[in-house]
Image (cartoon, rainbow, N blue to C red):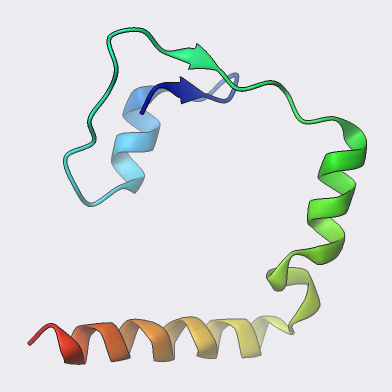
Length: 71
């Protein structure tokens, strides 16, 4: 990793990643997204286009499939 969004720490990212995250000596910042970019992402986000129950079921099915193939 060599960049973070403003207000996010390396420790927060590491807490969400199940592997040993490689961190560059110098970490830069990603630009803050513009309002138009955030609006676009919100409108086309899968979590917004699918009902929560459907999205949860798809996520669960995918996780179970991955677990079954790793045995």
